[in-house]
Image (cartoon, rainbow, N blue to C red):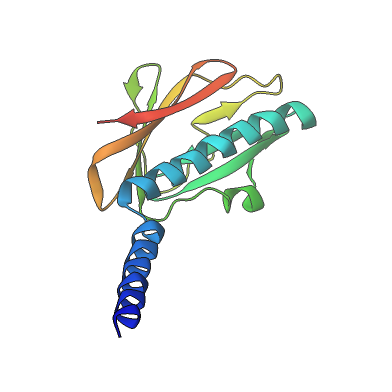
Length: 153
């Protein structure tokens, strides 16, 4: 009887432990989505060198889209746009030290641009989760070839 009781207690503790390990906090979700953004921006800069054309990301108040420059204008790239996580995210974009106002609709000009030599324009992008407004994850390009990410409060 005592052995059975010990096995039940261990089972309950294991179930609770697995639940705690598998649960995702809001901070972890934000960090995961921000890292996806950072990886996508790095990928776009690599693709710009590979295909010898500029890629960009345009932001609106509620959405984001990847664009590619095809003479004579920017065109949306639907497949790559789907790889950017936008659900439950809000953002603040800063270019040249100034906050950029975002419209409700796309204007067909990207905010973030990866040029054909692999450089990216200097920017600061703060990502926030709607249920976690007090902290943000900031992705920056302080040098033309390096994209970094850090927590921002």
